[in-house]
Amino acid sequence: MPPAPQPLNRVAATGRTVLCVVQIRQRFHAPSGYNGGMSHLINCEPLKDLIRTVPDFPKPGILFYDITTLLKDKAGFAQMIDAFAAYYIDKQIDLVLGIEARGFIFGPAMAYRLNAGFVPVRKPKKLPAPTARVTYDLEYGSDSLEIHLDAIQPGQRVVIVDDLLATGGTMQATVQLVKQLGGEIAGVAFAVELDFLKGRQKFPDVDVYSLLHYNE
Image 1 (tube, helix red, strand yellow):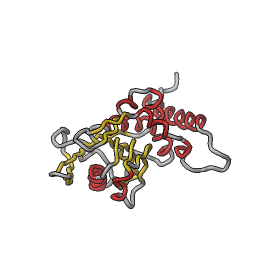
Image 2 (tube, rainbow, N blue to C red; image 1 turned 30 degrees about the vertical axis):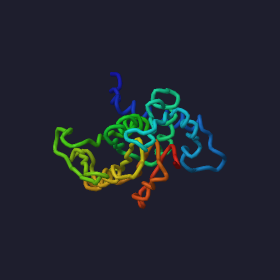
Image 3 (cartoon, one colour; image 1 turned 90 degrees about the vertical axis):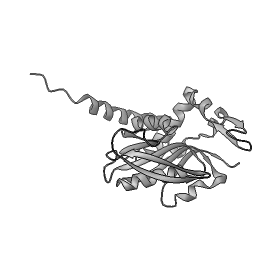
Image 4 (cartoon, one colour; image 1 turned 135 degrees about the horizontal axis):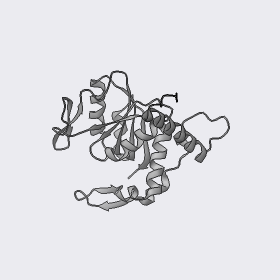
């Protein structure tokens, strides 16, 4: 009698993780004795050349960093996901949370590489099952975010990803949602950080990782 087949999803997931680690470690060689995260050897600065800047958008006086020109570049997008995966590959991540809407771009790809699940964080009334909600202040008014009540189990290690760290209000609200459900914040991740807005100061006890930094 032939042996019983292995569960395909588990075999595939395990294989992906091993392949991911091997690919990262082959592509970015660590110096002798180096035991830190491999992402520290990935230089993402050249990716800035792929980001389009749009003045006076969405209102006068604002310089908008448009990442769509980076996303359509297959090598550039792959390097971003490589860098995220390399940073978190040894941090035992259970879930990657993506914040609506641009966090949905990076979150599933990161989760795939980390052998983790993906959870969307959405605007109100977009999720069908019972949710937890947090409301946070904006410059003019307020906004809310929701997550399914059963999305996170107590003690699960979570990394949250979004495209941009500006003032940090949206990410701060998402961190509150994770804590409401008993999750453990393993870190928050961004494609771009505007250093001059000092948004990371809102996260004194959270590991903040950004691929690209702008000082003006």
